[in-house]
Length: 416
Image (tube, rainbow, N blue to C red; front, side, top):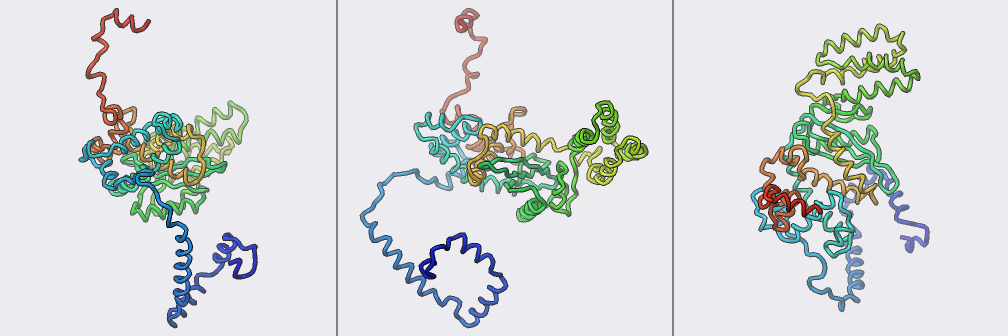
């Protein structure tokens, strides 16, 4: 373009910005006229000729260049990838490299540095990361299809976390199903504005997930997300807001303690009528206590707070998604931020896969078992939860040796 116009100051960014200024309506009118006249591709022959001539020039000097057979990493068969998440597949059907990469994924998820993994497997740490993320991106379409096909998402939690990427802060939104406690959608955005929340709603509709109830922490922009759904504010976050509001408006500790007990007591019940009666009672003395503004705000938020009081169907708090983010924090703190936006998205996908398949400490079950009870039979499930048995071929030591089998003098000798 610079050569054709005889200038030197045009760049790709300049041309892109100029093209974005062209109205789509004008382009449609112009293309309609050209199509009607049969001249829409009047330069096609010229472009093909130029491309073929350029291709001939580029390949003229590469005739003597050849690549050796077997150089590089072989691409895995898609059938072998699908076997990793097939409950009916046998461990022997999975190729050995996939077993070792699955084992690397388990090590990396639990905090083993890439440099250590590279030292153990005699490769560079970037090679280990490339293997891990390669298998992650191959598994994710299969796993996400399982989630969208088996999770309805009638009642969902929505929350997010700030993530630092190359010195800038981004917001990671996660939609968690209430019935299964599984993450059914996640998106990394630059802001948490109303437009960001609307984009999340559009993506959920494309996935054919239309929640009836959305439980949030009370962020104002969430009200623009699927406005047809019933929005519920977490009662725990509301109670936290009481303490925060009092500290901003009062300084005396005795005044704060007295008002806090009255204000928090409103929702400390399982009956909706009691909530309304207590709110009316504190409203009558709000002016003398100096909390009129808070009472007015609570009355405005009451339709989002009271449905969860005493309900057996709607949870009163967002504890489920808070537990999810506590697990993510343990994974994120080791990394201390991400290098780029692309690497961050890949690492987040890696976390989601491992979160679904790694057994939880409290019940020895993986979250994926909530929708697939036979998930324990999946080779990938066994590789990341029982690597010594499935990858190395070892056995459980408890099946062979028990501490009660040792003589007391032998135990004392081993401690010295």
